[in-house]
Image 1 (tube, rainbow, N blue to C red):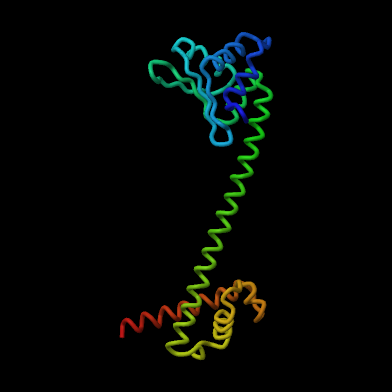
Image 2: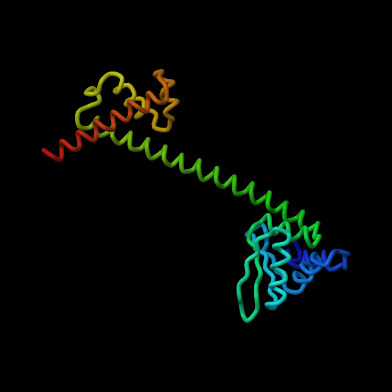
Length: 207
């Protein structure tokens, strides 16, 4: 938007729209001392007023079933709301309908972006975990191969070990398809191999 979101709202509501006294009071408080953050970043609406007006505004907002809070700042009172739904309700109260629509659009865009980020972070974490696990498995197999050779393993474990070494980038599901066994079956065998490597290292240290 060319103007700030606050100024956009003030431009919309300063057209002397007929409304009841309570709504008009909230509108006038916003025009005189209201500030709203960019909803695409955060949700915050505040009114900076003298104490008498602030108390009256608090009463009116509570009348509209909102939950405003009040603090003192620089010798004046600040009435504020941080809940997105309640901020939207204030825009309804002062009949800033175009700005309300813009707010809702930004809320939807923000929700979609946050949802995408959560999914990406989740998938990245899972990928990192999978890569780390595969690396640990490969290191365990290489350790056993170097110390005793893979033939020391049982036939099922040896087969999985060799496939893991030969196909470092394959998933457990893909390795299982080569045998064939289930993903959980491959994982179970690899866990056994890692445990064997751990026991061999522990025995080596004790010796």
